[in-house]
Amino acid sequence: MRYGLLLPLLLLAGPAGPASYEDYERARAAVASGEILPLAEILGRIEAELDARMIEVELEVEGGYGYEFELITRDGRILEATVDAATGRILSVEEEVDDD
Image 1: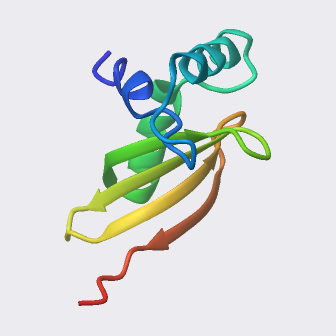
Image 2: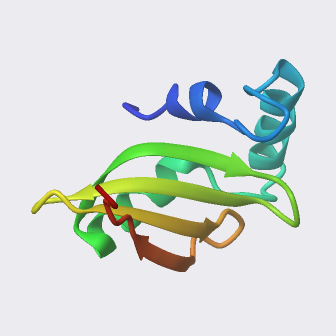
Image 3: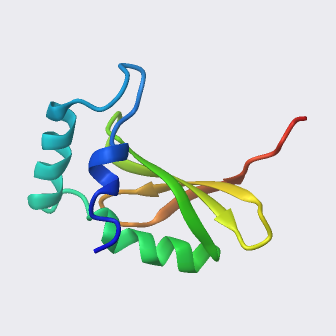
């Protein structure tokens, strides 16, 4: 499983700073209880649907669990996708625009 370490490493970087051990344990418990889907289960579908590869992912917990993906397309565009962590449904996709 090539993405097995991504969730613990990229989990919950939010206003409080980098993920803590408690954040990791809370997310792991949510996956174990079936409250949210594992990242590996969602990632393949998201990459295929958006025809893009993941660069970064975060798990947000405020207002319900959601994965925030940053992806790169074949032509180099950067996309930000918000996904419902419980269902795997894409909620929004925005293209990142370089203002330079």
